[in-house]
Length: 250
Length: 193
Image (cartoon, rainbow over all chains, first blue to last red; front, side, top):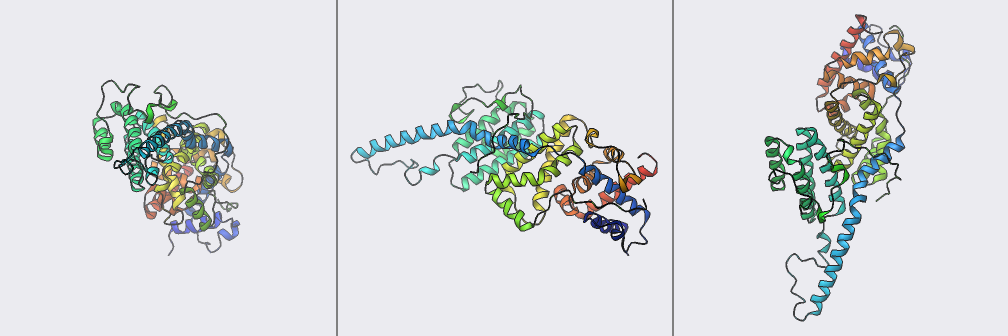
């Protein structure tokens, strides 16, 4: 014998498929009134959902695009400049070494070469994703949402593991994580800090009684200024209102 | 009650699973165009869910944006193991985001009343009006309300609801049955309509 719940599912499935009333009820001549009423309630809820006016998607997408790509835009020019400077320095240094007799094979272990030089810098992609996770973590910490902070810390740990697994150099990622955590740590409970240490290990700095000075070298890779979203006076989730062009396909 | 419902369409866009899988996998590979297509496919249902949980449309829009930003950031954690897994994953993120929003706002608000036309035409009108249903929905226990919102306002399947909520299908079935029964009894007492 079919239960009321199963009868409901069968009738509701037919209703969802667009069956006219006569077909939806076919074979259910002895349908319990309560099942009919459940279908009516479900239909009213469904109708309520359908009649919610969904906002324009394009402006919403523009704001999402700015949030997922703006960190790249904000940071990449600085990072690109740093990479170019580093590359120039390496070229000059390499040329000098090459020119010096007897030192052509004297490259120190870990010094970038034409082969392994690509792994010297963590890809922008990794740093940008860490940036987003850290912004979310900062907001969650300010809201006092320990569960979310832990969840985001785990995501950061996974990101770092993946980066290491891919052979990326993670020192700039580590500096980014340490810098962001140092700014929120004092507001977290000792238990939560302990949890974070369990997840991120020594990437969680010791608590600092008076915060971190802007000149803290660990605050940002390259010592850059904090992003506007890290200003504690701003609301928890600022939403960009500028209409930006669609994000380019990478 | 003696009439049957007018045709009702599923609210979440469906797509052949192979096409969806290709789209998701492209997005996992950081293809932002593929991600945009996923946004276009799922944002209307996520917006309905957000509206059913939050105070106003502005907050709901913010929440939907947050869901997609988080999804983009964590796409590489997603594994396409079963049909419906992606929508369930998105809604699991949405549940977390909404929970945080609700906690922050300290308000549990059902569908914003200004987003609805109070009169429900046709079959549903014989039973109750939509504003009353949504109002009654607000008073349900969390689990029952969540299941009814995801299942009927958003339009997920029972399997997708179970995956999104991290519960078994039988538990979802039970919560749905109890929630509908409670709304039905509320109607019978004349609290609706």
